[in-house]
Length: 444
Image (cartoon, rainbow, N blue to C red; front, side, top):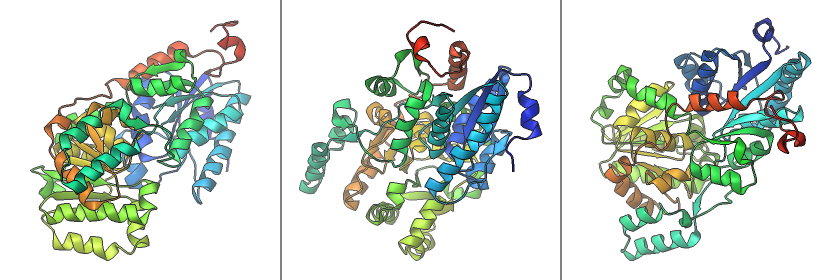
């Protein structure tokens, strides 16, 4: 079945530049939505292209409805991630070929580090089309091994100092780059950069990463993170959420909001069990925990024969443990996050949102590709090799006022800043830069 519908043909008929906002996962649906609406508001011709990487209502349909998204092209892909990625490349190519045959200038927008983003950017470059990379330059920062060894040994010796740990995690010299985690995201984000012609990067440190890798400073724009736009709006709309009617145990706050979905977390039994045992210890010691379980989390419970364990934990601790499937609506997540005492997750998006809403955050990973939140003091890493040490760190971060007071590092009106810069720099070849243009022999 052709992806070239009459709706698409009619939509592009009178336009030269075709802005293609690509989405595929729940985070990039949320983060690309304000950009999509801002481009339409400016009178641009916009196609919304959904790869189908996330497809059910809790991960896609709910936020599409919530943000008023009208998808023009929706793929139906299947198989494992490699097969899905190949299908995205092949099928996006059909759309690009048509646009180029019609003498249009495609301008794809890819977001972050997803397989959707890398597949679209790679496919586009096969046709000589450069993408706009939204959330460019995110690279994992991991504390040097001697740092972790020092703090873990002090914990074992009974001399651990939280204030020292918190201070050291705010020092850029604490960290190294080069981690292969999260995978394949750390590969995806690096694959996208050479295929992009415009870099919308969140903060100064991510700009420095791009510069250190040789990318042109004129193409790099520090704009903040587009998650700020829907999150700040969701904070205003929080009173409209009925989530506390559904879960009255959460109404008075003082709960830990937990969610885990990374492949390197769910695919490693030792790591996954350490996280769950840490949550169990928190619950048994009187902390309230909300666990938002995703499809991958559910699969891990079954894979490691922990289904009965988690169901019994919920049954035996109804006043301290809420075990829920992931929520469909972003406004509900933000309403709960705004009131919680701590966000505990391996999610990059949760790290960003926690900072914006002013919630303390801990990241159940050895490092993070949102290392700017470590350096700002809004977030700390939780290494996954000792449950007691993990518990110690979590309890110090719980309702931590220093972490709460950091303030929003991800900006506001981010999509407007991106669209302003894109429209100013867009040239007759879109964002593909020939050597003649790069060397100043031709101009816009």
